[in-house]
Amino acid sequence: MKVVLFGASGMVGQGVLRACLEDPEVTEVVAVVRRPLGRDAQKLREVVHADFTNLAPVAADLAGADACFYCLGVSAAGRSRSEYEEITYTYAVEAARVVAARSPHLTFVYVSGEGADSTEQGRVFWARVKGRTENVLLAMDMHAYAFRPGWIQPVHGETSGTRWYRLFYRLTSWLYPLLRRVVPRYVTSTEHLGRAMIAAARLDGAGPRILRTPQINQLGA
Image (cartoon, rainbow, N blue to C red; front, side, top):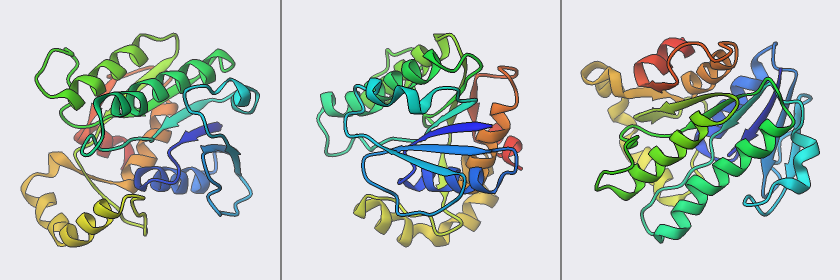
């Protein structure tokens, strides 16, 4: 299985990359990054590219993928609406368009989020953008899944690239055992996400297209 991975430097992407490198059925991981990851793994190939609104220059590197795991995402806090929409919507749709064009059997897994608004009519801007992105991806000619995780626990040293998030996860790490007991339907981990994405790639479009935390955990168990 050839996997194309976006967002490999982020917390979720790090967990997904780890799962892919450990899975014997994954033969190659092509990580599309702005800066080198600094990792040395036999199955890993990095494609360094600056403009995520135009992936045509690297299309040949992404061709023939069996799966594309899109883990690139940012918080809406502190960003203009146009910037958030470009990163959340434009980048994801461009990735799907370019990879799917040369990968006829592609499964595309998009990391969305709990609360995404499929109606695109709600009051919360980020939820509308996430919902719009999901809707467009799910309507494309490929096997597509939208993952809506809630609280994500980093379990193998994964760290966010955002300083505020790193501090947040450090200060709230003690909450995870409690949350798993009190609200398990909203808590997953980077490990479960990675395994669940690989499992989704084996479904060939079967099952529900939007998966929330319980379904993610079930797939990734």
